[in-house]
Image (tube, rainbow over all chains, first blue to last red; front, side):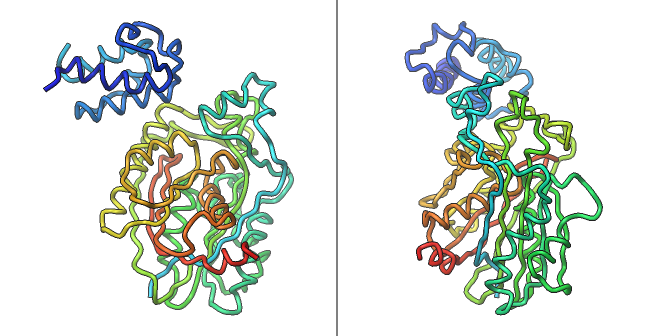
Length: 82
Length: 313
């Protein structure tokens, strides 16, 4: 069974790579918009993580995230892994 | 006998406006298409009465079927009438050539208006009779065209379907919902622009429309065509990815019309009929999400063989 961290990274990379195919975990500290993502891509990330972990996110909180790492931190908090 | 859709008529009067119009507010064609899928939209003359538009799009249906079948009702869905009293359905009925013994009324459920009107029309359709469900929108009168968030999104147009009760049609199903606590996600008024929380609307639209289609298809009767509210291609694509619709045609005509609110589904469907891109008869699922918030869907049989033959001539 992959770890929470691996699942989280895998889900986020799948969405991010639609815009930036070369993206990797090392890019998670970059600004979301520097990864060529827009606000709807951020919703896609949120929905994909909700589905992966069976949780419901507060989209206002997700919208405040500036980087994929921020989104990851929020979801770790949400699923009790922070 | 059960009611289903048997004919359609659409209209896009006015100016064809491409994305280049928005260069002046710093939005490129590429930017707009990537975020919305919209390439162009139609904007009506600001002085064109919406009841004239609704009446003119219903008139061909009355002319083709009025002698053959009793058309008992006309429902006109619109959120861009300006809220005046009276509404527009009664004058639209007169302009369409309907007799005075017809139930004619307006319905406003914003972008879900056509689906709500179809659900209502199905329940009003008498055995062996028919009803017309129309949607007519002039969103260009609500939207602030200089607003970078909403200016390029919306368009105008009208469409109407004839719903007729026939022995061959199977029972329809519907599912709908509303949540007044989410009214601030989308609101608008003529002269005041449209306010839209894009992320929340996208999130809610995908979830509610996907859930609705899944519920409607749970009876095991597969749809041959699915037409979602044509607000944004990104929403439609996401819904398409989320639900199992088998081999059904999933319609996306956002690029041609933009978001025409209640009129988007009949415009998209009319396009498919004209271009012969859907089976002439089968099972149709219509689904929408919009301001209110209000969402819903309906699955019903249809047979537009004669309409397609007209276009093929």
